[in-house]
Image (cartoon, rainbow, N blue to C red):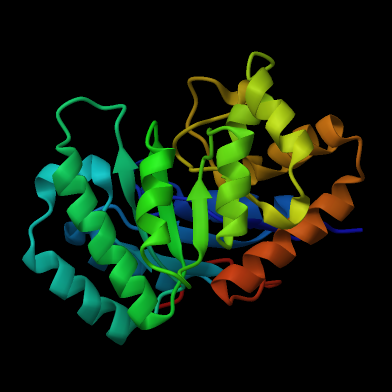
Length: 267
């Protein structure tokens, strides 16, 4: 049986794919990745992201303002984002959120952009793609202020208690290559304890490669390796895990898998 996987978080517009994007796309499709959600990081890159996702079937855009690009953001870009959401009809708002790991990123300024994007998500009835690094409790606090907003906490690394609070709020949790490292014991135990109905698969390509690809560029074709790790940890059929996590992604983002292997970008 052919697997159908959704890479729920892939920066396919990133410059490291510029020289071989078509080959990366083809490898993803051959591996069973039938859809990729491509989240934005800054307003300056929204036009490129739009062009990239328009070039091949099965790529879906999300537009937002990433906390790690805080120095690039301007207040007027929130209004610009509202216009993009209305005009471009993306599948989500993001990547947005909070990062308390990198020093020098003003928490109050981060919170201002994050809450503005939560408001936009609610107004446009879109899910949010949330970055939460050493900031899960604060992310939960702000999400609670916007009842009805759903989404995914990408590259989740919080506790089981935090995970279950987020599931209760209607959020899903994204897992990727980090699970493949034997030292990631806490994360592995969490994945074993959670219901699969709350899980999405992701690569975060070209970032966060798994154990087999340390110090290499990550790419969406490697998503199947995360699936294999999860199947081993849970002692469960990979096809069943693929079916459930794909169904989760399709429902959250309102997308459909693409079964066509495109041989060249659309003109």
